[in-house]
Image 1 (cartoon, rainbow, N blue to C red):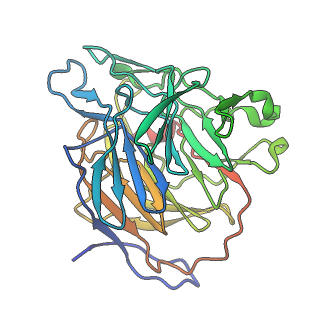
Image 2: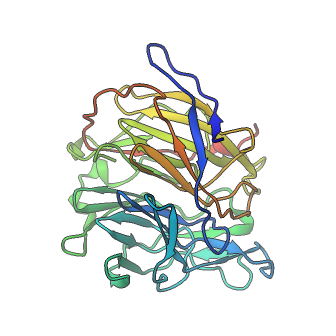
Image 3: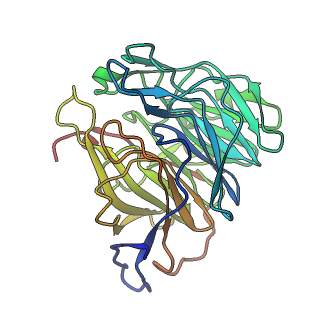
Length: 358
């Protein structure tokens, strides 16, 4: 019997309970701090990340170069050619049966005290199962927000370094918006963007981007770059590193982490909230929580065919890699309005509320 998710419909909507369904486990064990990407309508990929390593001194993990592909129709996994080097928090995105990786963090050496961003980029072609080098962005970074518009990939923000033992306040963050042209395999200078659109607004330490109907909670309209960034409605439950996906004109956020009790602590709370942003009305609504057994979940999400897939992640903070693949099925949570959103980039802000006392 599939797990049901507690959810309530807003007024004037027809609602049924959503489902949280288990799928085939990730082969080889759990994965955390990886990237999840969509190669096509039937294939999801997970790239890099960390696995458990009890021998590490500061943090019990090791980075991996593993790349695995999941077939939605067959509910099976296969292993692809590995990354050219192990990475955690990779900047990765899928497009036209390919995976683009624009750096990430290294392993931090034997002590794992400081993770440094890797100044290298590659593209994986699933038809030939091969990796090829690409020019890296400047400056190098990890855990950036990525989004596709046409044949261009937007790489937004990110970290240059991460001090594991002093993760808060957040270190070495960027406000750069870099644009990669996949047709020429080259970076477009930031001068391509007008001044108001070149940088994420002040105060954003970390970001997550989602594309809505061929579009990119700060909002950048790619059809009106001169207007610059606009701030949307605030997320009801402040949190970071949640799974997210797009269904129609809605951005669905699932789980996440945060709420450290002081600036010296790694965030230790995991969330199970499911909250939805309407890109048309600039408003949020709760879709309830994950099933009771899911006390909290942090992991990357991707949306395919009106469903959101969460691959791996953790349900124990700060390190506890999961090998689970689950899918969130809204069903007829409500009748979708007509889709016709212009091209916007939505950036969810990571601010101090995510790490303050509960």
